[in-house]
Image 1 (tube, rainbow, N blue to C red):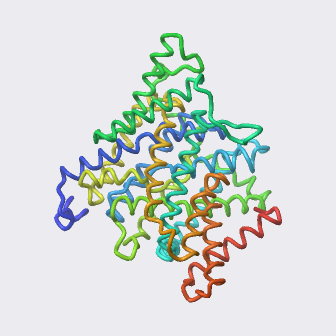
Image 2: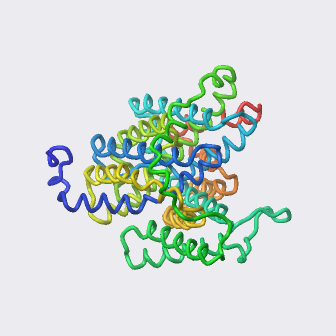
Image 3: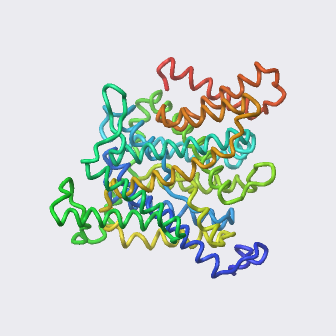
Length: 450
């Protein structure tokens, strides 16, 4: 049965190898179960509900990846996308609305449905295969910087400053010190090829904080897990099926603008992340394209839709899946094992929910480094359009605090420079469409409809 489903012999692998690879992938990406509640809680959502929604949606999307695409890729709530959901939309555009997260979830649901439809027309597949390789690598690196910046902010390594906008935090702040210690721990564990090094680093950093709390040194918050209330599986009712279509109907222009924003972020963030995953896992073909990429997008589209109904932000492929590939994973059986582990993790919810930001921040910073590595593949000494486009993708994402904005500047600059330099024939029809969409996005922003 497993051979028929996953074609193990064709991929020169075994059940044992695939299962171990799936466990490896889960261990390397399980930190999202602690990180996502920390980020989305800022939008006013219940932590327990976020955890449950994340675990269930991750399992559903990863199962679809396993059986439909037959790729060893795990999916969960995307870093960068959850930050956009919480900080840009809920705390920004919808800050004055009651329960802004309900409106945001509605927008995520609508754009998820749209992407399911687009998956049948292979629109996203055409986009990812049409984006120049230099831009792909720049996008991946830019997302890495953006994620690292979020981690440094959450742990107060980087803080706001009136004079310089941002500055280094204080070493007297235990959150900052513990986060830096955690980063070193993760780096050492990875150096020695310890399976699940990122997750272990998070747990060790958290334990150090608990010891300091018991000694009376750390007093900022209670770091001990609370098992007295049980698993609280009913908590998911606080976010599940809480979509606010009433607000959407009465504020149609504003809602469409928010949905449009999510479309952009999800579309191009997913493209960047999938490129990063495929690049790390060696799944790209000789032309830089990903076979069966449409099925990969369908998996995250369904995961996103289900996640929004349950109560979490956009679901996407994880770059940490490359760890499972390195362990020998080659088929969907690896992904299936990872999905099962997400369901098993539900019984450990009190543990994951007690993990503080200073312990999860090192994971964000380290994962950011993994994605930033794509910068080494960017060719800055070749075509000026490729060079400038990739450069803008890298710098604009963290500085503008928006993944979509970084990709927008990259694409616009690339097309304009190709035209000015007399290389119009090198611009594919898809890139012209993407260019037009971003141009319309600018018009929307200028006229205050975006």
